Length: 123
Ligand SMILES: NC(=O)c1ccc[n+]([C@@H]2O[C@H](COP(=O)([O-])OP(=O)(O)OC[C@H]3O[C@@H](n4cnc5c(N)ncnc54)[C@H](OP(=O)(O)O)[C@@H]3O)[C@@H](O)[C@H]2O)c1
Image 1 (cartoon, protein in one colour):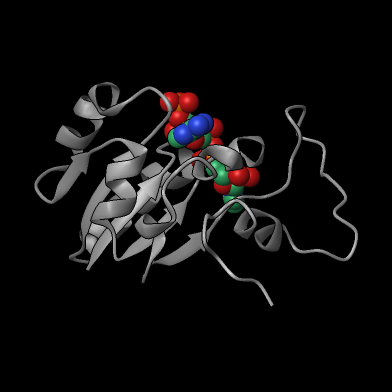
Image 2 (cartoon, rainbow, N blue to C red):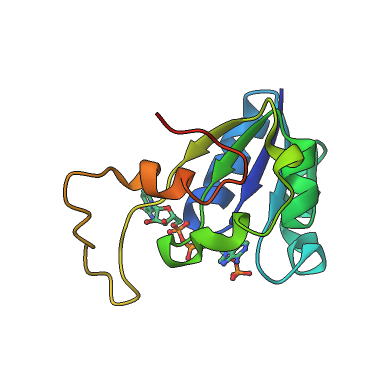
């Protein structure tokens, strides 16, 4: 399976290694661009690529969101066609910049993240 990972830090980077070890193809992305991830993907070995966020979503059958909660709006400006037939796994937790838990009332954090995905219909 092709898995696109947005955010290549503790969670995204570790997940990339585990997905590769399980036989999947992986694309990783971050805020600095694919060039900044070149050494990392070389360390992962064959089957790993560094891409822009947009290309990562186009690449993946499954998309893992592994970026800080406060950056979740990165998805908002992208074309809705990009997200058609994609499975999105949200690993983000609602922490502030100071690592305080953000109280979302009776809403789940993934419901809030889903609102950032263009074209998604929540019921
Ligand atoms: N660490 C844990 O144990 C843990 C457990 C469960 C869930 N989580 C959740 O998983 C998420 C990631 O945690 P983490 O510990 O992996 O964070 P992290 O190590 O700080 O990594 C965050 C990644 O997100 C990227 N990023 C930031 N802004 C971006 C943007 N606009 N577009 C694309 N990529 C962007 C960063 O890239 P740059 O460096 O280029 O900015 C970095 O690669 C958080 O929401 C956290 O709450 C963490």
